[in-house]
Image (spheres, rainbow, N blue to C red):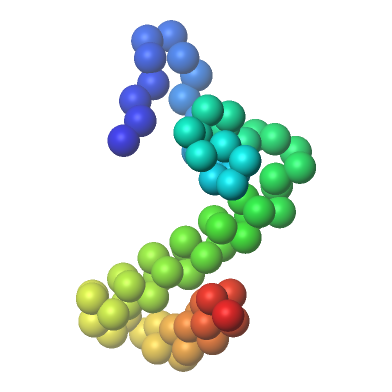
Amino acid sequence: VYHKRPGEVSRFEGELYDMRSDPSETSNLWMHPDYVQVKTRLLGRMLNWMMENEWRTSGSRGGERFRQSVMKEYGNERQ
């Protein structure tokens, strides 16, 4: 959980580290332009996982047809 400091502008900022070259997690690559595609792919996978798990645990909300497409995409990403 992150909290902004007094006087800071609130904005979403995450953390992204290259665990092979930076195992101590000292260089946050979240805002680095070379990692935009990696960040986008990971955020998409996280969103798909969150939607799939919400539907699985919350019951039917009319999303069963969409769930299959989400799971297909999520499965493709995992391969």
